[in-house]
Length: 188
Image (cartoon, rainbow, N blue to C red):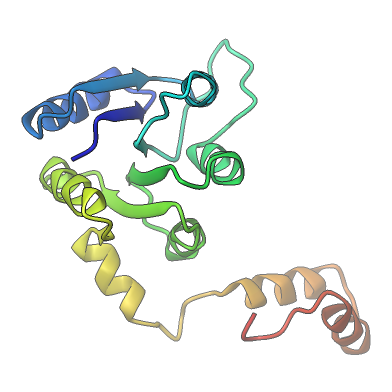
């Protein structure tokens, strides 16, 4: 089981629930943070002290307030930490349910779990932490099912690129050459 975990959520009540779950799993050191910047600095400091965190549990959306933050979202934090600390395992604990965004996030090799906040959220989070400690992945059942099913109505990255070019009024020839230059294809 993990020895040192950092949790990041702007709501103290959510952090308290996560702390309770991690306590039942007998994780000795848990550091709660309400800002992504604070979490980033704590992870960086722990690595410099040669006492790195084993796991990061983070929300994706954070409300802005009086502080000017470098990391505006959990996704920004995840990207930076993967870049600097590729061994850090990450579990996302969020209400996010947009498949496009979820796919992008779980495409990050450090993300070993994605748990939906909700009625069973803390139970699923406990399962995700256990799976992650066994070097396995865990995704909430609703996400796992949605990720397996491809809908004809789902908008992919390619579709977004195409719609953007069309909205700018570009011709088919221009879009075709632009996509070739950018190595954008329906399967990319």
